[in-house]
Length: 230
Ligand SMILES: *Cc1c(COP(=O)(O)O)cnc(C)c1O
Image (cartoon, rainbow, N blue to C red):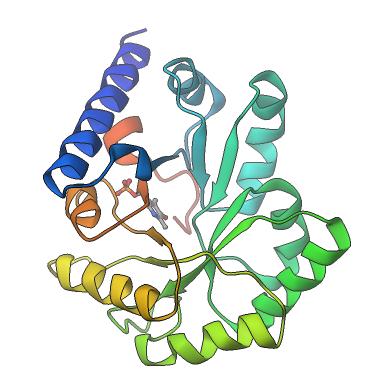
């Protein structure tokens, strides 16, 4: 019970911070979508957050989402599910079937696999291209200098409609320059959506134009690794 109340008050606090950050930036708070990242948390932790009115959720693994969400979606109308983690091409079919948005389009093989499934299934998830703004070798995402060409290939070669960009700034760096760079690449490519900002930095991301903030820990609490790869 205490955890339930904690999570409901935590999401209220996050929503208040979003409103404040948007107003400070001279933006309408309604232009910022809160994606509540529920990865590693079970249905019992997610239900109270749904009860608090949240409808947009993020997961980073297709298998985990498949195990958790179909029952929740059946019980709660209007749930929108976002894939925020990297996606293997061989899971494109499951991802297109389950998710309403995919934040991690990052290579041509994946773009091709997604295009095929989108046509086959007649489903159109919102697509974001992930940009590796810190050029970190361990991170996925296209390099900033390759983003324009990749976006053109998504459109012209695969017929994909890309709606925005996503970035995850390097852990040890100030995030603002990374948000600014992502916003600049989006602007020059005519993309309206920006998926940026996590628990530690979402108010800064909103100042730089984030339309989707992906917040996990600040709502659900610290994640306990449940698998060795986490
Ligand atoms: C886990 C995760 C988040 C949420 O991170 P927090 O720091 O817990 O808010 C956001 N984006 C991606 C891609 C993630 O994997």
